[in-house]
Length: 143
Image (cartoon, rainbow, N blue to C red; front, side):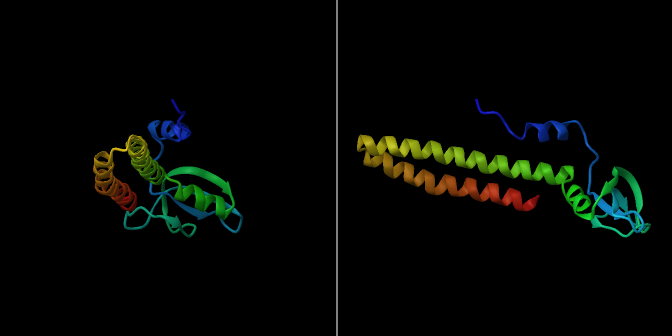
């Protein structure tokens, strides 16, 4: 059985990290930033860069971090985003595995010269795989 190279991410998500959305804000005139759950004056969670002092930090994720690029990356890689990426990846992988199985069956039918089986498999591939692929892609767009 193949090893899931994303198991570390799955385990980290299962451990219950701080839910987002996450935002980041500069600390003064330095190159230091903080990442966390930030709310505006209307108690609305914020995303992306926020100006220092304009938000209320509800839950710091990384209180002190060097560099805006790192802060932006960490804020964007919040648990909801990672869950959505993994779900989309899993759905697409499942669709590809189904297609690989159908391709193998198609090859076996071709070797056997079974034209009826080939036609039936072509129909299944056209209908089922198209639906599976569309569903996987639609799920990814929702996230």
